Image (cartoon, rainbow, N blue to C red):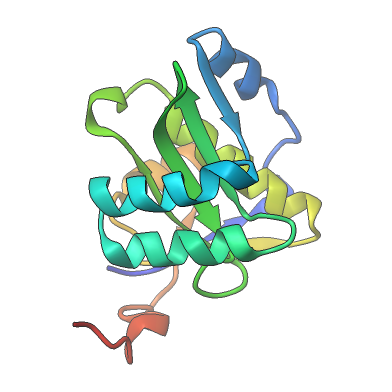
Length: 157
């Protein structure tokens, strides 16, 4: 899986997707303190331990560099940045039964716009799976020779 580059300065400063999510009874926001351990556990259960570890790092940042999607007081999605390396977006995921409803896009845009507000000019999407999705949604471009990228010396159990 390769990395992709996003020009944050080309993303419009439009947060209207937050209101659109609210219309579907979904809140997209940063998690508050009492939710941190719940989110880490949820990510580990729904995805994997490595992503849970990255999420824990994003939650330790000040300000927090993570967003959650919540519906009916339940976590249904998340997105992090600056979790494994500065300037990197990810990990991100939406629970299977909620996919295809714009939740992932809202989490992606919230994260990238937050990075833009912090002064980043670019974001790297690390270890991309659905590259066509990122090309379509945020005009991401492939970074040549980026596999395995920063993960080449990753220790795995």
